[in-house]
Length: 426
Image (cartoon, rainbow, N blue to C red):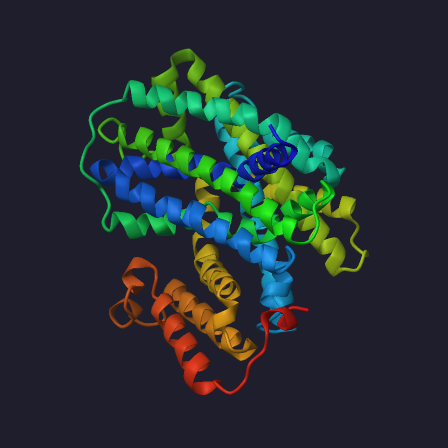
């Protein structure tokens, strides 16, 4: 194996593990259950928002040198700080980090030690995190070389057994608009938001291995391909395993209970142990990266007044108390937050990758603000928006207004001005 290929595999494995957290295990399995005989459409929809768009986020990040703040600064400096901070908080101590801890407790700790309280489980989980991330330069190699292979073996074992010996007969779908529901469900993985933050870590790892200039983007893209192929295979496998259980378990079952029951049925006495290993590693690798990224960001934002190590402890403490709420409650209050952040980030990714077709930053500003406005309207529904805006009833009412705004601003309202993308983020 050449040195370049080896580096791409190690970094790609690390990226896979960073993405593959709590939501990546519980959501595709549950989608397979509720989509039943239409599970193929749910797999495609989930993979699009859970794999495809995050990869585009990595590509967009390479154009901005790994800085989401630079990407969002095309809208305005104040917006960039607010948006980046909101993103960091959402994928950090508000939602993603405590969700990884809650999932680990419910699936990896509680089945083996029923008497363990959620608080003790949170403290143990974050204690391990803190011990592993106080030296952030070692994160990528630690994850890529050691933790990811164990995680993959655990997941592949579960999926192969589910394919060879299906749990039961498949039933018709219990949800409407399977494809669009799966697209929205992909939001809950939070991988698009994470991609915009992780790109800086991946680029840093690539640079740390001696790559320069155009080679940075080339290696980052190749590493990203390793990660997304792995994610797509695992997601497809988990959806398939879930759909074979549609005739056995009720759609009312909790997402964590479903995964635990499926693993027990497929792997018997070893099922709980295997899923515990997979959950523990998936959640640990993701939370490590998120805590490190958030801590580094707030250290930079405060110009060193909030040191990295202090941020690690503060974020971990906040996450402990939110994690105690449990997975289902965290998922419920996360939904409206993600429904607002995702349209903003997807719009920024699209305009960054298609920067040669964007005349100036005014076009970016107007498009992003419109996507945010209609996303907020969809969440809070101040009037009967579903009957007025196309696709709103499917959760995508922001798409058409954003496209129309881009076309009007780019070709009619601001056609005379032109600003190169490179200059706009300098």
